[in-house]
Structure formats: C-alpha cells, structure tokens
Image 1 (spheres, rainbow, N blue to C red):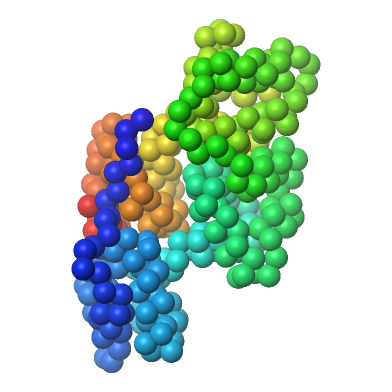
Image 2 (cartoon, rainbow, N blue to C red):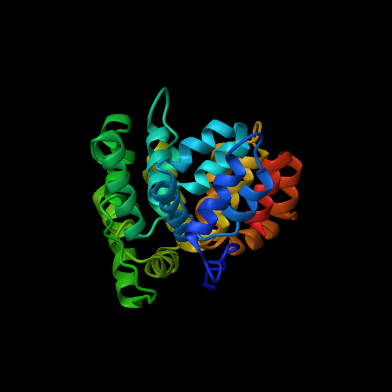
Length: 316
C-alpha cells in the first residue's frame, strides 16, 4: 500500500491568533469576505483549524461556529462551519445526524466507524458523550438492530490492531475460521466474522482475503454475500473494500455523492473535510482510475460559487 497523500498540509510559521483575528475581520461588519475564509480555513490542517477555533473563543469570547452561522448560509456555510470544528466533534455530529430523525444513514455509519483510527473513534465517542449526554452506543442500539447493530458495536470498541505487517500463518488460520463459521456449515457464526473483521489490522485482513480465496476456491466477499443480508452484508462488504483498497472505497463514496440523484452535499463535505489532510491525494488518484475523469472535474460540474472554490481548494 502506498503512503497517505494529503492535499492539505500544515502551514509553517502558523499563528492561530493571527488567523483568528483575520477570520473575525472577514465576518465582522458589513458583508463577509468569503475569499479570506477560504484562504485561511482551506489551507490549514485539522489540528491547526482546531487551534484557530480555540484562539477565536479566547480572543473574542464567542464561538467561531455561531458567528459563521450568522454570516453564512447554504453549502458554503456548511463547509466553512465543518472546517472550523474539531474533527472529533464534526464526526460525532455526523454520527448523530445519521441516526436521528426518520431513517438511518447506514452507509455513513460504516464510513465513519470503518475508516477512523482507534484514537479518532475514541475521540469521536468522547465528543458524542459531551454533545448529547449519552454514549454513542446507546443510539446505535436504539436505531439499528440485529447483525448490523452487532457489527457497529464491535467497531466502536476500537480493538483494531494498527500494525502494518501481516502474519501469513495467522491469515491462514483466520481464513479457515471464517470458512468454518460460514460456508462450511448450516447457518452462520456471526461473532467469528465480527471478531476478525473488527480487530485485525488492515494489512492482516488483506492477507486473510487472499488466503481465503486460495484455500477455498471462492472469495471471502462471495461468502459474505451468501451468509449475510441487508445492512450487515453491506457493512461487512464495505469493510472488506476498505481492507483491500481504502482510497478506492472512498472514491466510490465520493462519486455516489456527486453523481447520484442530486448532489449529496453532506456526504461530499464530510468526505473532503475529513480526508483532505489524511489521504485525499490517494483518493483523487483512485477516482480518476475508476471513473475516467478527475474528482476536480466532477466537483466543478456539480457545485458552484464560493462552495465550489472551497471544495477545489481542499482537493488541490
């Protein structure tokens, strides 16, 4: 796997107070300087933006988010607010919105829990508790059920091994356990699938996927399709996609946000903001490979105005 390629890097000679003052100037008084907001927030890393947010509150005794919401609207307002929030709080809000109201955004839940590091998921869970007064697990239990609920609860436990090396012997053993828990018997031992898919490192899972097909003559994906249904099947298949090619999986999520029935701005904003200083460069490459066009071109076609400028600045 190639190293992560961000599109937004931390700026050198960073001064959080100077940036906070510049943002205040951009939104104070008559009119709003949208270009200044984009220039600052779209060229700072997640940690730097969090520092700006704190500096603003310290200097002006006001929340930057509330000031931005007063001055901005529409999708441009949404992306600027998303950029000013600490990542853990932003993702906690996205989790909450995925489960509140009518219906559940299952894809969003898997995307967030399946792609966060253990530390990111712990920080998101802590932010969720602060914001909503109860653990994220409570809402998962209240809004999902069955195998899909079990999968999400396993992911939120943050038990994934984060080493980069794969153990071939362990992969063979796991491949056999998965076979015996699924294709080799009547019924399915779901706990075996969850224990392996939510705790093994991504490198280990890639090796296990390869060993499974080599040993049993069919893919692990086909076994999951046979053994699981509905949201649990979708969730496990998306985890396997992440293991094999995370940037490719996220590129598909972006394409769906852009080219579905109307633009899904919420998903587009979350994916760009959360990945721009992680691996958006890798995702851009996969997007072009899969869809024979650039991410920039599709964003340009589907968005407009200051919102488009902000997205394209983050994409690089």
